[in-house]
Amino acid sequence: MKNYDEERLREEYTQKPKTGLDEARKLDQKAKLPAYIFAYTFGIIGALVLGVGMCLAMEVIASGPVMITLGIIIGIIGIVMVSINYPIYNKMLKARKEKYASSIILALNKKD
Image 1 (cartoon, rainbow, N blue to C red):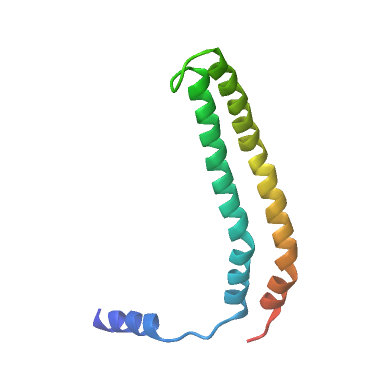
Image 2 (image 1 turned 180 degrees about the horizontal axis):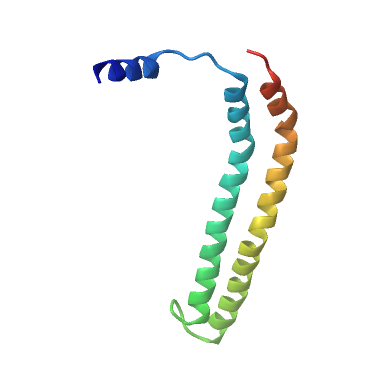
């Protein structure tokens, strides 16, 4: 048991040489991260806009015929934002993958 613990600790604290796969993983993450951040941010904002529109339309925040109309309009804007989020994400991810594809393939083909 002692030998296993010693070996595990030694492996954890020794420097490992960087491989092409490590570089490819880093580039892959660099390619995908902006698309993920955009999708989550835009989706949350769209959901919040939709929620505000629903609250106005159901007269939770304010009342009156003008507020109901405004709530419906704001709610539709939120629905549109949430609906277009996924296609924008896909387009953004595809463009970034195309941008980094040659670098990733080159890193994977690198001989160590």
